[in-house]
Amino acid sequence: MLRELDPLLHSQLRLGIMSILMSVDGAEFTFLKEQTNSTAGNLSVQLDKLSEAGYITIEKSFRGKKPLTTCRITKKGLKAFEDYVNALKDYIKP
Image (cartoon, rainbow, N blue to C red):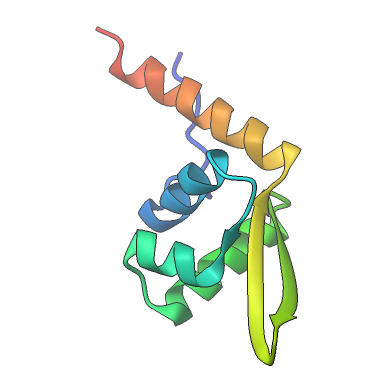
C-alpha cells in the first residue's frame, strides 16, 4: 500500500523551500524569493504555513536599518521531508 504524500510538502513552492533549506544552515527571505522565483507575498504565505506546521523556524532581525528574515529547517521539518521523499520513492518504483 502506498503511503500518503504530505499535502503540506506536495505544493511546488513549499517543496522548493524545504529542498533549499535542507542544504543550507539558514536562508534569507530574499535568497528564497530569488531561488524559487516567487512573489514576496506568496513566499511569505507559504513560509507561514511551514512555520505553523513546525517544519521551519523564521527569525526576524535587522541588518542595519533593513529588516532581515532568516528561515531554518527544524528536526520535525527534516523528518517530514525525508518521509515525503521516501513515500515518493514508493510511487516511482517499477
